[in-house]
Length: 83
Image (cartoon, rainbow, N blue to C red; front, side, top):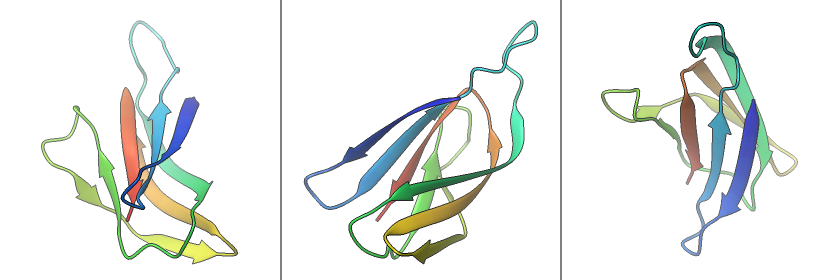
């Protein structure tokens, strides 16, 4: 996996995660969690992907400036948005 973390001007933090597991195509990962630093405790964490029919609100925890989100499945790529 590779990732890129961006803080947007509106206060949201976005983590873009790319799946690099291949075996005759991308191998979807399951049971994925992601942790990343944020400026304040988010009110919501959403996962977006072109592989999903719609964005998904996911469960998360926040401690000491770090949000940990239960992503579930990682297809080709996702954007995790902490608001």
